[in-house]
Length: 614
Image (cartoon, rainbow, N blue to C red):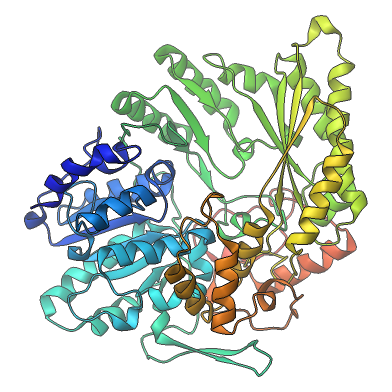
């Protein structure tokens, strides 16, 4: 019995059958016998999370634009579906053709979040593919990965055949072309890996040996094949106006997290927030022109039927031609009864006029990210905003008719004191006072300020990559301290689970010895670790103990600035010398100007065609 026939028998027995049906508007189904390459694009989380991700939308349609490639989507089945699949002998399958994932040529994972790593092992297991790359023989799919976590993929290095570093639109096509040549040659599996290892941006973990000092720190990372580069440099797209961008996207049957058109306005970030990995790994800044964006918007509105467009970037208000774009988009969206949202706005250049212009169809809430409550700590992290910026923006919003503002903060930041923690409550109260000081006739009723607090996790390729992380107990203490400091009922407080952040901190800066821990934790039943109802810290503790690895080694010690880091052989274009300077400036409480104000010499101008500001 075919997989599709078996699915007919079980879909009504599981939650959200639309997760597994396929056949959505704008999905692409090709006859497997008509293509040379079958690529299973795997997102290691449930459908509604994966279908909200812009990267999968771009690369799915890009690969399918190649006549000789069929790209199909695969998501992690929810536990109830996994139970039914095992009961009925159904292996992991693709949505488009319901084909077995093990029959594909490539199984490609996007690495968006460290807490999805056990889901990767789960998906390989459900597909019947050996977990470790060393156990895969001729005829097995090549298991590859990309995405932000790929820049330090060492904790899952033993499970991956190769990794694509950087932006994928060019590199993935080069890999597909090389595969066709290799396939015709009749050579073995290792030969293909040697071929693609010579492509800039390709990292083959098995081609590198890692040695360690007695204290557990890394002594060296050295290539063991002549084709492997000593340093793997990321890939970027220089000209975003001429890079592939889909004119249609798959429209899900069921509701997903971000159910809208996402219009990517630029890549990179001019800011230098010292905690933010994305702000550094996506440098340099490259913008799309308003003409290109308008063309994409018109096609996507026509081809999807969506009622909302969101401008996508790390800091949308830093787009140099935003007023022009907003005016042109507003004229188009208002006519089509489509709303326009502007996430990722900076507090220090917030414009109520712009917000009122783009939210003519539907008014949404406003979100600002001060990140720290005190000015001292905001200077440490180089946030570049003041309390006056926050209250000014809040006043503009309240006078403009908004009555709900979200404020994002972090606790556990380097040099943080209890005074810095309670300053979060002080800043929220300052926002409430701003509301109270506005005459009732000039403001909306029933104000609410939501304070959302996450726990700081040191990340690779940031000035804080050497820092230690607060213990879960210390984070809980700070959460309770903040909770006690918030007494106004108009201020609500939300926070993230500290034990999850603790484990994220281990894997965000881990080395390949953690692969054994991941495998052990998965075998014990760890799955969907980013979901509170499935996270099992006790099982993780058992896995670390059985493997003889102390997680505190990775997140409880402050690392030497001279220590060889697990990602030392990866080049994102921003130098370690720059990160060291920024780390020192953080402890001195000194800020660094944004890239347009003055070049800080990070090194990102090494990429030809990248836009850096003098």
